[in-house]
Amino acid sequence: MPRPLPVRRRLPRHRAHGGRITPARTSDLVLALLGVVLLGGLALAAAFAAAA
Image 1 (tube, rainbow, N blue to C red):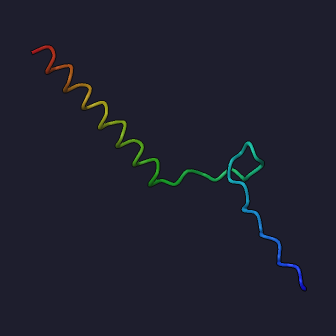
Image 2: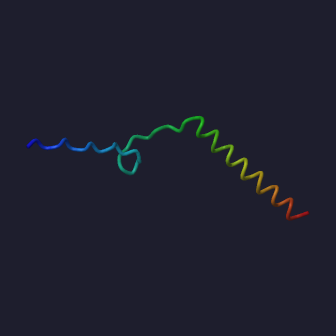
């Protein structure tokens, strides 16, 4: 009876496991920046609401 083929292991993506460093895409950076701006705006609005 033939042996089954071994399951291929996925390549590690984390740097700690020896994976390659993948550069951040521009869209990811833009989304992160928009998230930071949105959170800052919400914090500013909450501060003004608390002061009023």
